[in-house]
Image (cartoon, rainbow, N blue to C red; front, top):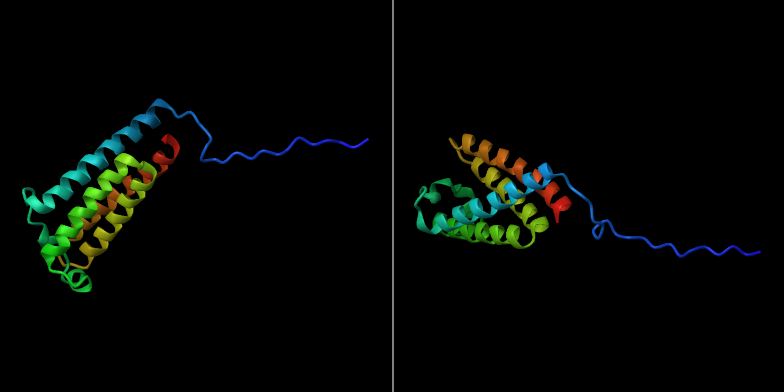
Length: 141
């Protein structure tokens, strides 16, 4: 007698719904709204210069590598940060990685400048929060 096997249906982990704890959801929400707001504000301020003169944080080597002035790099950074905020808002799984990688690039830029190591360290710490956000976004979306 031939045995009939039920067809094997494999579901993708992407489509699987999981329950997350209230604390996990709250941590996700905190980082979600923080990265949207902070990146949008920082990006817009690259054009307004209310918080600081952002050109002072662009390494000359980076400007040279990009064949741009420091002001041009600052404007480009502002656009990237506004796009990253929108990415987090619309597609947190992808936007969280954009935020994290962008922060690593900022750290590299700052480490190539003398006297900016403290700010580089703080951006590195913020990128760790970005990594945590990527994990939470994978679970909460």
